[in-house]
Image (cartoon, rainbow, N blue to C red; front, side, top):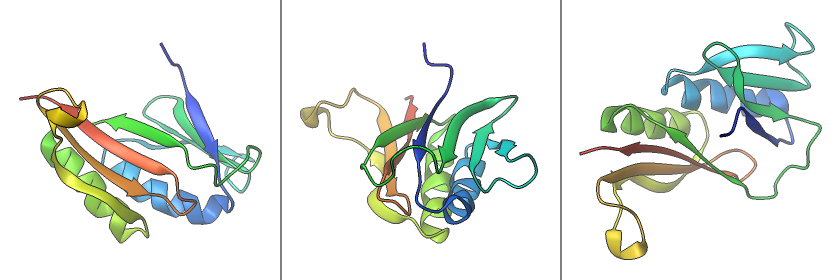
Length: 127
């Protein structure tokens, strides 16, 4: 089981504006900033503790993929709308994914490229 993960970004402030909106739609918020209260080096998102970090320490623009669990199809829709409004690029609108392409039945997801080109996904695995 994964406790936390993260990615490097070129500009923490620019990316934080994107993730504040996109992850906020999924119920995540900034729970830690490095330096404390400033966040210019890194920002950790979560509920009680950081589960996803963005920082300037790790390589950026390596085109990583991260999928965040949503609690409903509406949350997937909200993630996509917030992420695009915050400057992300649509990389697959909300909808059921094709089982012929390897997705399980009921896989409802949306994909958005963040400011560094990372593929961010919100998925609801429900009926």
